[in-house]
Amino acid sequence: MVKPLLELIEVSKRYPGVIANERVSLKVRPGEIRAIVGENGAGKSTLMKVIHGSVQPDEGQIIWAGREIDFLGPQQMRELGVGMVFQHFSLFESLTTLENILLSVPPGRTEQETRLRATSVAQKYGLQLALDSKVEALSVGERQQVEIVRCLLSQPRLVIFDEPTAVLPAPAIASLFDSIRKLADDGCAILYISHKLAEIKSLCHHASVLRGGRLVGEVTVADTPEGELAVLMTGRELSVYERPSKAPGDVVLKVVHLSSTPSTSDEVRLVDLNFEVRSGEVLGIAGVSGSGQRELFEFLCGERLSAEGAVQVGGKSAGTVGVKKRRALGIAYIPEERVGQGALPDLSLTQNFLLSQAGASTDEFSHLGFLRSARLAEMAQATIAKFGVKCAGADSAASTLSGGNLQKFIVGRELGKRPKVLLVAQPTWGVDIASSLFIRQQITELAQAGSAILVGSEDIDELMQMCDRIMVIAKGKLSPAVSRHQMNTERLGLWMAGLFDEPATSEAAA
Image (cartoon, rainbow, N blue to C red; front, side, top):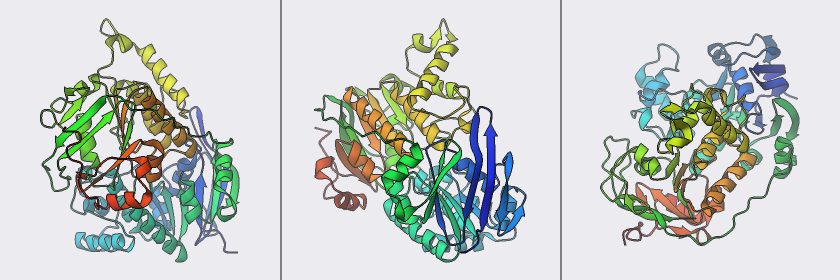
């Protein structure tokens, strides 16, 4: 048997109030694709950061290529041959894609050499790079692809992928899997974190299962059914998703002839968008990254302003007012970028709970001009409890939470407002399978209570499960909205490529 390239022996890492890893041992061999699975907060990302060098463990041993080494920093581990694609991006938004890549290449490599190598790697792995675009103008999916290329440029011997497909379009996922298999065939060891069990079954050879920071099992993926793997991850049988049918009510959100003129070459031009969402309805928007979803949600939530009457909420024109006034009209928003936009990492969960409460009743969170801190902490703690957010408490900084747990907190915070309109972009990005089912169930129940819900997602199965109607945005144009019963995977794929007969026109304008 091939000797392990990397071996961890009884590694532990503890934070105040949280055991991230407890005596975890792990091996991965050259050419092996090993999945690291578990619920949000199980310790997967912390363990991978120990290997990467960005987190120093409290105890344990690390053996690299048969030789025990010290736990080193990221630069030294990179020099040994460890690369990592992070779940949360480490990109400078004010710099271009190429400038971000240049920051990670060895000294002395010219800009032209880096441009050629980055283009070559992107083409080899089926990824798209806008090298001269600023990162701030890229979608989440496009930023993920920058991270992947930047990692692979160092020709690593071991690559850690932390939720790499969470926001990638289906064609890019297929290409990425082909590339990962090629890396493994060339002798590269792969550690792969994902909550998508179908991905793990398709890609991985073995799986190490973490629960509560401890290693609870190691399995051969081909011999382990998805249901058995899910139970091993969660320690319980998964609940059944229920979606009762209900006739929709009155139109709550209406978009009429919404168009835009891009201010930069990186923005997508929206072309005469028309649609409506009714009370009690979940309307889904499918589309690959960079097709206009981000621009549309910015116009709807108030980050961008539009013409009078182009966006209407409850029969009132809202397109010319900003975020605060739209919240007062009953709009809540869960953005795709959770760190920095959905939550500020250095603030506590209680403080982050307050940030999006503009427009709430003044009696709810203040009295005589003073902030009701105890009430805020109570509401934040209630969200933590209901959505199973694993953290040390409401005073925990958002940066101390795993990506999936931060997503659960943001979702719970916005759903707790019981909004008239809920805008959701990538609702279960980086969330474990049990929590994904719970979030989808909560969104469905919010619709049943009368909210109008618009969900943008690149997860086709998610849209087919949650939504009453589905439409597609491609190159800034909207397809007609059809019942999910009239939609299938093949049709949706064609529409996502822009191959729909006619764009949505006068339904909402009538």
